[in-house]
Image (cartoon, rainbow, N blue to C red):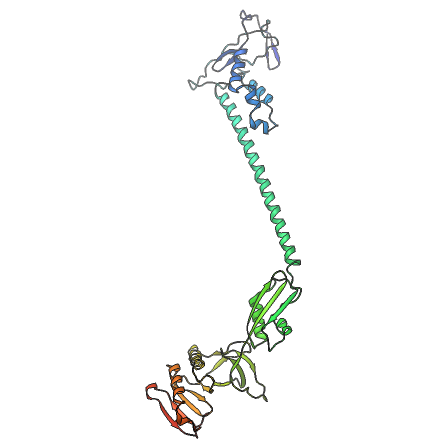
Length: 393
């Protein structure tokens, strides 16, 4: 009697019924004991299976299920191969009469030397590959979980930091005190109002350079503003005011200029020119706005003006000059002490020419108070003409 896939097949008695139970595999026929030994040897016994860390970490795969599955797959069967009498067999009571010897299958017709799958052929390799795949999948799954946890934790920390910084930015760094230093012509309130910095605003809601430009534009006598923040809620503005040095008529108005030719203010129609200022007669000016530097028509003219005034500020005549005529770069004239006319020609060797003029004016001949004209056009041929009727304009 043979049971095939749950069916009982009745056949004529076979003289080999008394023989022991055998199991057919592609590489041979084995007894049940031999089959069990081979399975245990391949899977290294129950202890090796149970101690496998991959199986311990993945409770979804039971060692018992693995063992049973391997045992099922090791049966070689082909239900349609009636001719070779190779069937999957099962026994209720092996060794007690229900025994049969199952013949081995014939080799495949195509592909000599090839064996059909089984525990000790390609099936065994598949079993080992399945175990490897399970371990790799478990490892990949564990890495993926760790990666997701790390990413989630990173995003959580980043969100927390962003929220914290936003709260600090909004409620902690708030302007509560503003101090102004160095201002004499303007009050602290005027400087603060001109800067645009407001009490209650965020300490980092404005740019220092923008606030400084606002002050110098609205408060022309302020040449520079050094603004710095005092953590957590203070602002300090250090002001440097310009000193009036020159005056010049530009576009029909009398402008007060600093030593750097920055427009500090404009005189009214009935206002007198402050004493001590040097009157400048300038070449064509293209731009003149209070709080900003004047701009000339050409860069060459600007260079001549600045070079000559720089040399004058360094000479002994710096505090004695009354006016400087710079309308022509080749016919520069300076009035000193309201009675001496210095003709310099061009601006070359301006510092040497001014020092020479200062030395000449120290001569005793000028003690009488007479006016004079000094021709310094050619420094090696300096000439002096004493004349009280000179036109100094």
